[in-house]
Image (cartoon, rainbow, N blue to C red; front, side, top):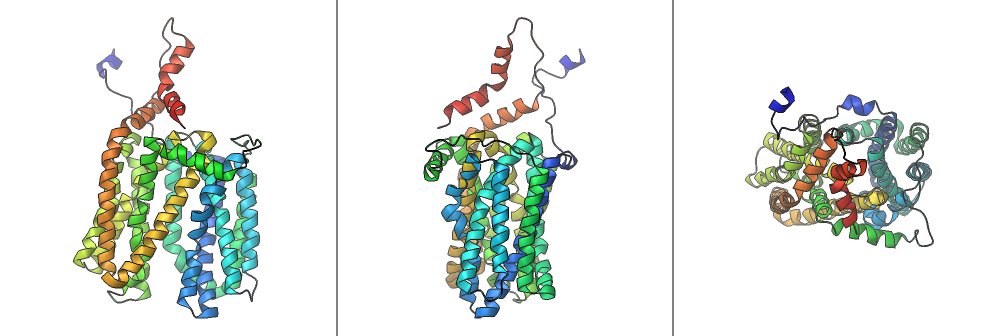
Length: 452
């Protein structure tokens, strides 16, 4: 009787996972530890390479070129190589990539290498990150289900941003203590330890796709992945939300010239670079812990606009404290990526997950690289404040259009989340098991049937 009085349309509370539940999963702990090691090593390597190249050449151009190589390989080879994580067991792909990267970074630590040799090794090392990231992203939904996946993604995001906040300072201290070459050797060690953690802490799963006579045609797989993502309106909207970061990443690329409008000190540069990651950490924590799954989907458009709107105020030349607050607020808004990522996982068939993730990730890197490059060129003429404001205005316009389109397709995503959150219906007399299964999963079935 009490149950009837709750109302016919009242739904049970949506299940929200806690961080404790996520860390209770042994495989996630292994994936997280391996990722954290990679983040630490990457920050160390970035500082070490910048110091090494600049001290050997004295050229800011060559130093910038070496840094740019961290963007180019995933753009060029990411969509193609990511398909390896659908053709081979994903744990195997991650371990092999880690071992190869350990060897390549170990070669970078050898004294006396030319800048061009270092650049080639950097290119190859970053290129191997594409299949590793695709395999890791594709296996995570197998390790964490439902809202635990969102909480796990939030933990990974917080770990990444926190490593950026402290990584450059810590990396500089390590390099000052042991030197550039030993710092690169430490980075090589982190890849080796990561491989051991993955071997010991994750279980082997079979490859999602069977490797037939034509299955290793990776370019064909790339084409199929693009057809899958862009042929579906929901996936197309979600990947567009992901690529929106090309606008609000601009302040990060212009932190040094922006700091020159104040006092130009390294401390100011560091404060500006850490403002957005700080907001991202706060936003990811609040968004994953205190916002219900369906409300995350509803608020994606507004959050995407929040990621861009504060940057427009840079046109008014605010003081430093206000710039830091505005950039941090932009970082808070970018937490919508958690919901977009979770919805993307739910919509993509498991056998094409790595290819779809690789395509999305390559687009993110391309948008960031091209956005920073275009912003740097424009800042030469217009000044960094104006360029940041323009990036915010363009991003806000794009986010508003995406929000309108998202409102037209989000209903099916919300319905699917509710279906996964609700308990199984009580068995009705005379109703077959097949009929009940069809009633519970009709949306999932329709989605798979419509996939290209």
